[in-house]
Image (cartoon, rainbow, N blue to C red; front, side, top):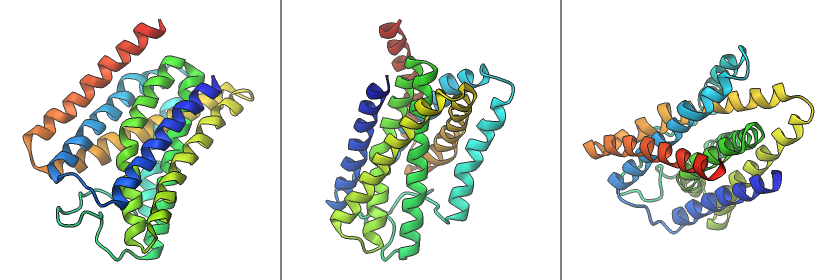
Length: 251
């Protein structure tokens, strides 16, 4: 099962690299399209957290809500202490992303923050697969939907901080590879204690709630269109249908 999950992780890593390549080629889609995509991804990720990950975590013990809260606060504190705030869309006339030049320290802090986030994505996939293969697959789908934007943003930031095109792509690759490390950890720790694996799943649940409800969906509202609302609802609906299909095929 570990090797299957690592294979899925490689797909998310490829999504990171794809996003980074789009950034260095300076081919950013329109602001409205980007907002709609973020809204869809936010709805999908939030649905994964609320409909699948949270119920599964709460069934695994009375202390799990504490870890869910810690997961939410973890991402919030990382943003605050590293001064990484990606809660607005770049302007249409700035296809490279945030305004350049970006201080080198901000670029490094952003890279650290994105690596921590994608490491937790890996933990979520691994812990979900250990808990129940169906859950691991739906978490993989949720991760996959937001990895192209993540790769795009980190590469755009590193370009703005003065990194070369190759360096920016390598930054995107790094957040993909750290996901594989996160995937492997729950499989190893699960052999020591199931409580640790359950705690990692709950921790990841909190980070997914933050990602969907506090980051992606509010960020999509910058598109200033009612269609964005529909994209969020569509993300929820597609996740629900996807989870039902996964349940059908996996029994």
